[in-house]
Image (tube, rainbow, N blue to C red):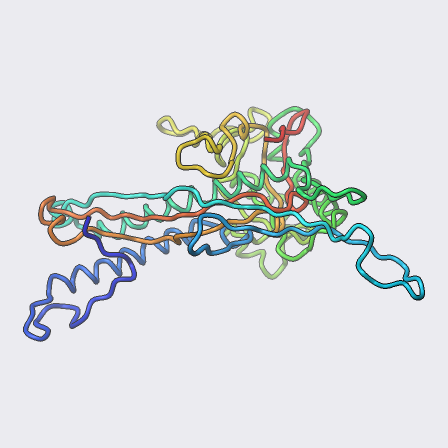
Length: 379
């Protein structure tokens, strides 16, 4: 299939004329279109993914997997005069290796019929490209958040005698079995302080700590705690309107996302009659449900869990950037058909693509918030 990528550039004048005796009008216009809608795709991706910058990200070249090294804590001991110093008896620090494999190519595409584009009174390609960026970003974040939730349920990967390394943390929000506990601002504030204490106890760095909640939880916090010193006084005027990582509790910066596992769905669920009740939606909108994304799923080479494993009472994530890692073999790119293919089909296929993989690295840096009587099981 003939195509052009976003890195393609055209020579000669942008709009028509001849270059060295060759008419380049069509090629240059197509190249300009490509630059415009590839930019829209990138903006759509960047504006809708938050997980990419909150975890450890590596770029992979000439390989299918990448190793992350995790070292445990070492010990201190007194020196005996005349004794050679050859490291401690256990050859510490203990080390564990985590391998993250790139999943199969993730794509989002659309066909733009030339006649539709001619008749449309708006920029059809830009709109389609932006939605392609949204789709890739949504999947990207969902996989990373599932990896963090998995890590919060796991023991430490370091296994060495005489050394005990901490695993993940699960914190119950509220004290009842009601889903509505997840939306109570007081319960959430308490959970955040508990999480900060747990991370401190496990020796997790304070740098890069963050929390991700569903939108309704976030706005509950904005309404309830904005006057109690949890929002910087200088930022209060805009924080209640923008809602993008404004609140900070115990040094944990809080974000909102509709892509976290939340009460069995992605970001959209309600707490019943005693919590946040469902709005009156016209149509059948109930929120996106979980899909299988275990290693047995086609295209998946890591383990993000089956729908049943992730569908639990999870209601938020708190983590430090070492909690998970993401490997990118192909960053977000745009391709478009051209030449004879466009002539035959009288239109172009716009394709956004991405090749990445994610997994947890240090469980001690991951905290899962949940409601109900028991914590979600490991998978």
